[in-house]
Every structure is written in structure tokens, then in C-alpha cells.
Image 1 (cartoon, rainbow, N blue to C red):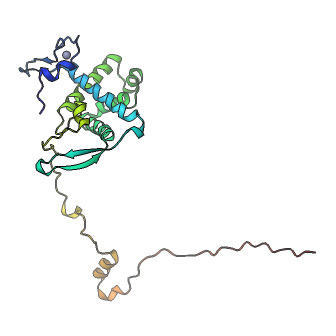
Image 2: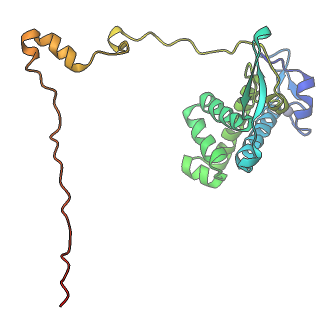
Image 3: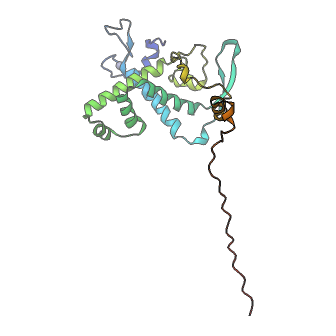
Length: 232
Ligand SMILES: [Zn+2]
């Protein structure tokens, strides 16, 4: 879990923020020790979003593979990766997973498809103020998640692209419920249908089982030969 402190929020805070007065941390009734101000969370989101756009828009031949170390204590291994493409995928998938359906619709229109507030407000059926309040909420929500994501956060960007190795275990979702027996996959190799049918019908009827095949007809090509005219 990320520990929010003034040292990692001060540089990101808006100097004219009325909530934190440029300090990056503010205390609320729920968070007596202080929490990151919304201006900091929005700054984190915008830094990640700018990097996402840069990775998408730059020429593909500039992207290159890098050799990274995978975590694992003494059993570390090297693997090749393409950081730009990984970052684009992480940004998209984390956003999709975090946002609600309504938030995702706004995020897709405004941030992914690039529609301005007039188009988005008309499409979503809201006024200008409601639209920008929703944009701020989406930015704050994603900024917090991008910073607190473990083991590899999307922010700070230098840690993501610099190959910082963490040995923390990723938090994986719980295993899904086991499939009912009827839905379990067949063992491989599965018996062919003709064998099953032969067993059900018994040995006597087995000989009468004829596999169904579509009628096969071969059309012979018609020779299109023009007879040569004899010279007069
Ligand atoms: Zn602030």
C-alpha cells in the first residue's frame, strides 16, 4: 500500500489549490493523518494520460524491446519486453477495470476518442458543469489507483519504465467457482462419436453404423477447344 506523505505529493500539488494550499496533503474527518489532495490525484492521472498518448502516437519504429529482470528473490530471470506497448495496455485495462459503466462511457468518449465537452455533454445528456465534475471524479479515481497499484504502479513513470523490481506478490482475484461435473472438459483424446454410437448400439448394430458424409461429386472440366480452321 502506498504511503501518502508530503514528500511524494508536494511537487504534484497545484500551487493555487484551495483545499491543500499547494501542500499536497489535507486532513479530513475520515483521514486524521492526512490524505492526498484531489489536485495531486488529478496531476498523477494527467501525467499517466500524457504518457499513454505519447506511447500511442509516436512512430512505431522508435519503440524497442528492453531486457528486464522479473522478480523472484534468488530465482530471478531475465525477460524481453516492450515497455511502451505494455504501458498502453496497462493504462487501458486498469481504467476499464476500475471505472463503472457510466464513468467508462465518459472516459471512452472524452479521453480515448478525444471528443470535447460539447460533444460529450450532448451524447451523455448532461450540462457543462455536471460533465466537468464527472471528469474530475474519473481523474481522481484513476490517479489514486495508478499510484497505489501493486506490485507495479503506473506512476511514478520513471519506476515503470526504468525497470524497478519489486518482490511483492501481486493481488490476484479469487479463484472462480469450480465448474459443475457436466461442464468439465473431456479428457484428451476424447473418444470419437462413431465409437460412442457403436458402444450404445451394441456389437450387432455396430456394422450398420455408416459415417455420414456429404455427397461427393466431381465436375469434370469441359474442354473448350476451338477447332482449327483448315487453310483454304
Ligand atoms: Zn490540492
